[in-house]
Image 1 (tube, rainbow, N blue to C red):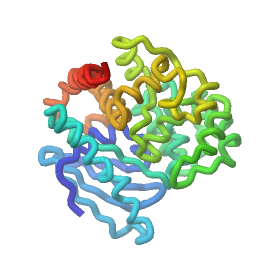
Image 2: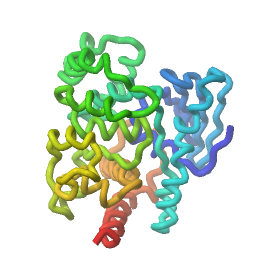
Image 3: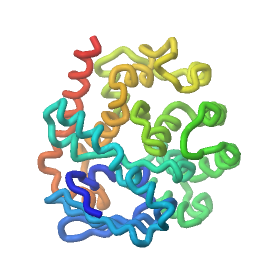
Image 4: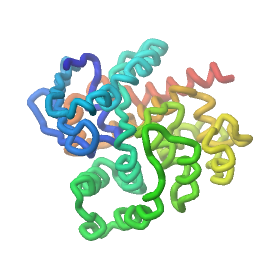
Length: 300
């Protein structure tokens, strides 16, 4: 299976599926192998300079191969490409969204482990141990693995199947310390719904610098079952406003903005494997600002 035109380094850099893969550096890219969950055994060789990827699916159970297009971001490639063409910016079209509904429960736990910490330096390490069956609350002293352990009992009975039903969303919102950010991240990275975007501190800063929008109020999220476009606070809340402004590109722009924020600092060892040549990608922060300005003109 050959894939052309996707930069899997940039795509994995922001993905909550990154801990599910083993990354092995090569001279001109890396090999990424799915070690946990659905389609385990999928092995891909990514070459950075040619943006070409060759995947071996022979070790994936035949019944699970149907999930590979979502897992590799092939289902969302056209959406990123469409935005790329609208902007006349080729870089956007090289990124995609990897998602996996059958891994949703594990993805949710990775999302919880990403709170208030560095994703590449801490969350990846904790999550990989967790996926291997390690009791991370016994191994790590940080309060974050311990907070996941406390939440697990509350999450145990919630159905996280092939799609997020209204009932599932309501049950998640009723759990203490689970709010719109966590659910939006799960909708995006678990189920591929780009209408949703987790408003992290980078995206919040981007929105607040241009628009007078505030934080979400959980009671309205419950009343509207996270259907922000129907909420009376839609244009006052960061979640509703970004959804109204960016529509199906909401999760796309947030993902690009997160990646851009990573490129503005010194790359970690793992990031340096995922992206060997920053070069033209240094323009990504400026490009994200251009995207917001472009959509705002159309919105007004």
